[in-house]
Image 1 (tube, rainbow, N blue to C red):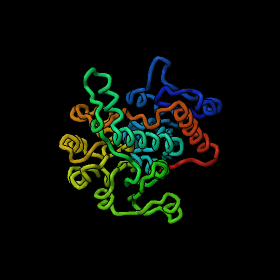
Image 2: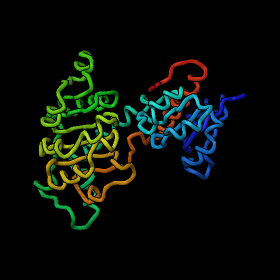
Image 3: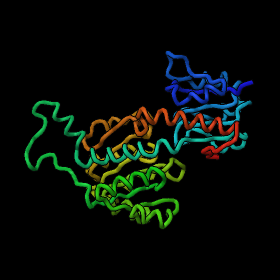
Length: 319
């Protein structure tokens, strides 16, 4: 009897072709975007594998109901939507998809950085409103990237990919991690390990590229923002709750820092009204991995994790 796999979101089928060949795979109906949590709860006890999305909660209640479940293959690099300790206790393997998201998320961080520094989005908006924008030599001034310092909080795959892009723009790289990367990698990226305090006080740009944990929750708060340069830019393409959004809105409004670029928000899809009113922040709806290529690559990756788990092979296990 074929293993049964439940996919919570209606994704492109191309990346799932191998999984569909091998197993009995259930997708949401064609006219539906996704299964609700309650719908999954009703049927999860019939499935051997669950392919969850980054925003689908795999909590204690669901894991208790999932009596046949052996693996949760998460369609994301982050897995804070899953109760990892309880899944481990229940003997359920959890995997993620780090490789496909690395380069596009670094692209997004660099794009936000350029847009904020050179006021691209702001100027685009204002040009569309008759009489809104001035064309003088001292109007619409921004900041060059060349020679500036980029401070990366979280020098993992995405942090390193961003560093490569920043080097091409002539930026200097410092970083803070739970531990330093190898000397070889530091030389390759021309990166210097510094304390968190030095990173936030000396960097012209601070990019958040770390996972959301109890330790990193609100790592960027009012006190930290007050220590940053008044000309500094904050970029967050990681997880929204790493930044105290109310404190950031206040800092942007009061010009405590120069600007920010955000692809993620503290309260998910709800963007604070204060941020929406500001010109010195560029906002995007969590599109760091939103390319045709990556969507299929991630589907292929979650499929490979499930297949290799059941048939023997390499998986990107996180517990």
